[in-house]
Length: 493
Image 1 (cartoon, helix red, strand yellow):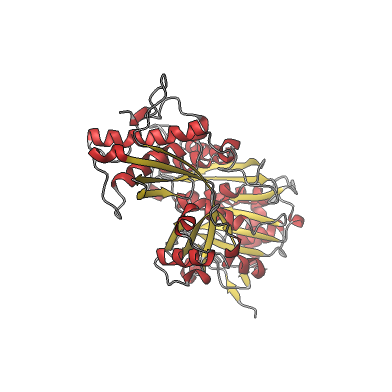
Image 2: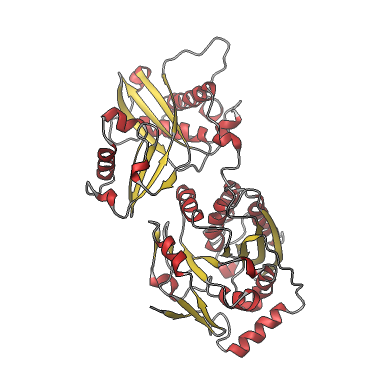
């Protein structure tokens, strides 16, 4: 059944008269050289009113050959509603602008809606301009016949970013144009914040260009750190990292425009590549996919042991990141998930960790050893006089990946992460084997661990799997003669 929706941006963010809107758009396109590229898989387009950023936006679209696509998927930050770790899509088959109806790719959106973090929240679309301001530009500069899918992007936590990006990435194909509606930076009194990275008196464009350069380089960790330090608003914070986490390997990024006006950067970007090639961001280092050597695993264990010894000595039971440990192997700097488990007389004690990779594995080992020793509320905290009787185990995890069929889980080889709504739980690969559970029993126990009914995993839950490389040693294990201490950096004894 046809369900048309009048774009809320008409008459507010752009003209509500067809003739006036066409005139404005033609003025924006005037004197822009049209260069139609057929290799563009994604574009970043500013979303201020046309009189501010419309010329840059038009310049982006006039460099894209619309004949290559079956749909344009538009991601916008949520300007008016809180959508924590969620995406929202509108309930419509057509969106009406003064230039006519835009067909919605309902089939593609139905596949997107099947993901557990995608919802339809009418309030998120009632006033949203980020996606709607793109529609007349797409109609005028690309094609009036190109179907769209509008997606409002919520506030995504760093530890959920890869999971969500991987799930959305599975739905993209060579005929999909991804449009991220985003200004590269906001700062100043108009937006309630200041560019804290820019020295006093420096032109604010420098900060905007730094943001773009990190995006163009595909440096997701550097990009997120830059946003935290600079205090940028959500227009950059939410949809751009999602795009970066989905970026195809070997993608080429080029800038379009670069005007800084009234505290915002109205640069655009073209991403040339193919959604049929693998992703590259946060997976681009071969070292990240390589297993650790036994020596590197022992280094992680020693870092954790040294952190606990320092805690006993100083009374500070949280990590101190004053400097990176000396002599750290490159693979221990790679971004991975990990869990630390403590044993005493063969009985499992504290166990803490993080499954989604978002920081270097050496930091995971240090902090999660402290958490397992002192902050796991299920067991008593480790006492100093008993510390030497413990064993420590570090499990280094691969990035979790979404699966569609629970029967494909390989017990004993793969760990399982279950999520349903706001509830979640996981088992490391060894847990079902130690307990002697079948696969179905494992799923039932996992559901109960998440606070769900025993069969809660059967309907509406998402499942992800991962592998683990495990290292274990007694806390009192002696170092080989001539070997330096491994408790380096801020975690020295």
